[in-house]
Image (cartoon, rainbow, N blue to C red; front, side, top):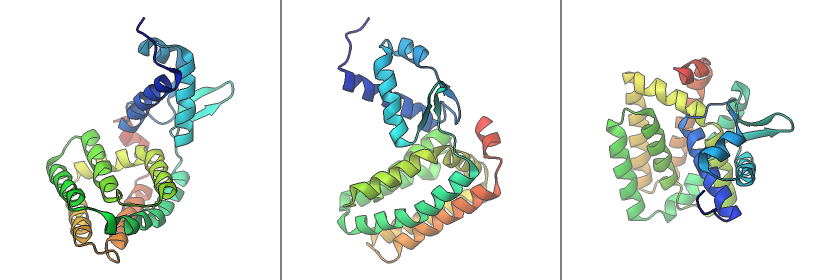
Length: 224
C-alpha cells in the first residue's frame, strides 16, 4: 500500500476526483457511489472517502441519506427551473462587480478561450472551456459569498448544461446563436460596459433556461 496522505489531504483528493467524475458526466445523476469500491480503487481507507462525500454534499454534488448511502445529486426539472431563475439574477451581479477589476491579461485569456470554443466538438471539452470562460469573466469579483453561491448553482445544474451542450453541438443553427451571444458578451466585457454586459449574460441564461424547459427529455440525451 502507498504511504497514506494526511486525512484532510486525502479527503480533498478524493473529493476532487469524484467532483471531476460527476461534472464530466462519468457519474450520472442518481448514481450510487460505492464507498468500499472507491476506497479500494484509490488504495485508501473508507474514512477519507466518507469525509470527501461530506465535502461534496456541501457543494450540492452528492446526496447522503442514512441507510441509503451516497448518490450523485439528481436535480428535478422544477429544481433546475428555480436554479436558472436564481442564476439569471446572481450571475449578472457577479459580472457587474467583476468587470471594473478585470485586467488586460484576463481579457486576453478570455479571448484565447473563446477562440478554442469556436472549433470545439467534444462535449466534455466544451463544458470545461465554457466554465473557464465565464469564471475568468467573474475573476474580478469582490464578493466571495456570492461567487460561492453561483459556483454551487453551476455545479448542481451541470447535468442539464451537459444535455444542453449536446443539443447545441448537434444543431448548427443553435451553435451559431451561442457563438453570437458569446461574441457579444465578450466584446461588451472587453469594452468594460458595466451596464450592458450583465443584461447580455442574463439574456443568455434565460434563453438556455427556456430551451431546457422545452426539451424535458434531458435524461434521454444524457444516456445517449
